[in-house]
Image (cartoon, rainbow, N blue to C red; front, side):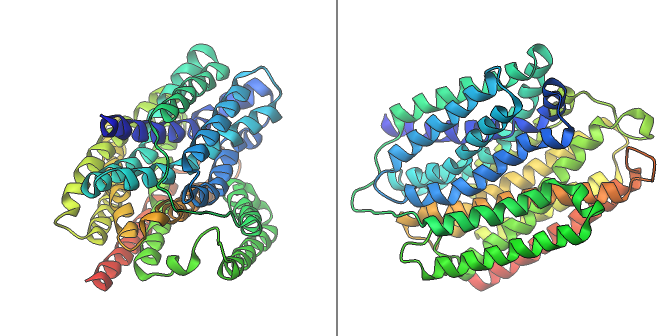
Length: 454
């Protein structure tokens, strides 16, 4: 009975935190209008959630490796609920950003859900549940996007964020009733200096990814900030190597299987999020541009349904395939599928049905990739370090997704003629071909990883 309750609880919590974090995407224009701020400022309702999630993930992963994992999960969900309340209350824009930052902290719970599954479920069952948690943490965006857009259209921004408050409160209650204590005999300390330096580095990375106008208007300043981010990451690595209780075990990350998987996740994340943003932006482009379909935010969100459905299906099937096919080969095959989605989008996008097909192919590839990734990493990771190892992978994924969004924006901006607001249709083809290159690199990295493992 406990196992039957535990599995849906873990999946539900992972789905909720992913869906709530994605609420910023369809609401950016509505937030700008409602709070009388610029679109650039409204964009931070998404960026700040990604930032807080990227910072919280390794910290929560380390806490989750210790004896107080249940308390950590409940306290984190309480923070998410409090943040959700701030987004609903009639407060100024700064409080909305604070609430979104608190909601983003919940992204760090995904790795803890995996740790619970690995500790309290039989090995084969646990592997399947971990793969499913990895998938729903991605397709949650496909669930949250259309719901948020529909609620915003019916009742405004506060109504859409009210949905986040309801489901996060339900997730907190579910965790309180279902999540067991961690096994005894574990200890965990948080490397505070490492967390501070990592936060500063990630803030610079996400700022550079979000402020695309900085690259076009002030390239020297952007390059300087990029160098500073790399320097901070180097300092953070030194701190972790010297720390007796590192935030992330960098030595374990250097294991060929883990390093190869994280490289594939980083480059693949760039490509996957690039195609997701290209399709949704193309679908909403007004007819006056000579292309696009002029869809409303809600209808454009429906384009994500094939992504979610086929991604979930791939996530259910991949653990079975992983019993016969090595994980790295599944990563490579999934990367090829995503690359096929880019090819479809580049070659045929004159009809709305073609966008649905491309989005479905993307979901199939992303679902398979996400489901296979934990198995590759956890195969060489001690059980007690499950949360920490997967936390690092999710930080890599977050940075890859942010860079994918930035790359798409930069390519489309470069393809926008002077005096025009919308890019030329050829810019979308260029961006799609760039994605093909990214997925080719991901495929090669995965094949090299498979060869090393064999």
